[in-house]
Image (cartoon, rainbow, N blue to C red):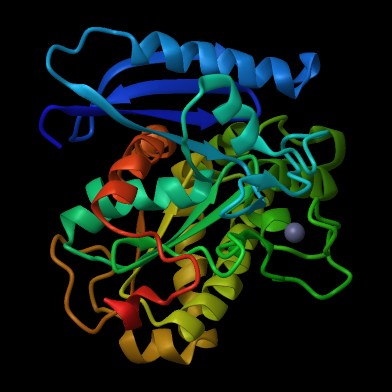
Length: 337
Ligand SMILES: [Zn+2]
């Protein structure tokens, strides 16, 4: 990566974060601007491209720009880069985001799902690096529940770019809460921040705190109803992880996002239920759940290490990843490497 820098964009429903990057976990420069969704998607793309240009033309000595990576809410159709009915970007259904950005900038960009790039960053510089793990599955509990799958250091895209939508694994009966994806009873409806607020309202009515953070604070103080909400979160995570662990048998599952501040509230139920529900977990469960060093042939579920900058870091890594290896869209990296 010497003598090169990349630019990454974290396209969020509230903020656009743009950074220049030359290795490690720190950025060279960052720009934060609001995502002006109300003014239309062309406005957002223009804001994004102006910030990219501002960083692209900065003087970084002998470093030259090697590529631009964009992390966007999905679902995203790849390799084209077309958004398909993204719940957090209303009105962007069918939007050819890649084409819009590339025609404005006059150069190609790498584009990927926001949870995918966050998982890539966690593998390269977070828990994956700490524990020398090349394959992991990450769930991000925030406004929604994102999911990214890294196999042998590469994002798993599936055949059309839509692999890794584990936030929409069904964890309740088919008559569970309606989800933005069109389904019912998805993990996202039981483990995201809005879901926690909704469940609190269902349980406590108008007495419910207004944010998941406040509900977590009350739960930590011992409020039985608020504690019950996070037990439901742990329960939902265990059901989703049972499916993922039984299917994937990876060494490491990472849970990130703002809801993770309540780890001590949801994790005991999550681990207890996993022991009951997943026989692959039961057969591979470690004695120490969060050790400093991971044992081989065990299944670990750990909190994310990088925090909210993981998505931006992953977007910066995207062009470097594309340059240094191939992104096998249709091939299984475990088989082909
Ligand atoms: Zn869903």
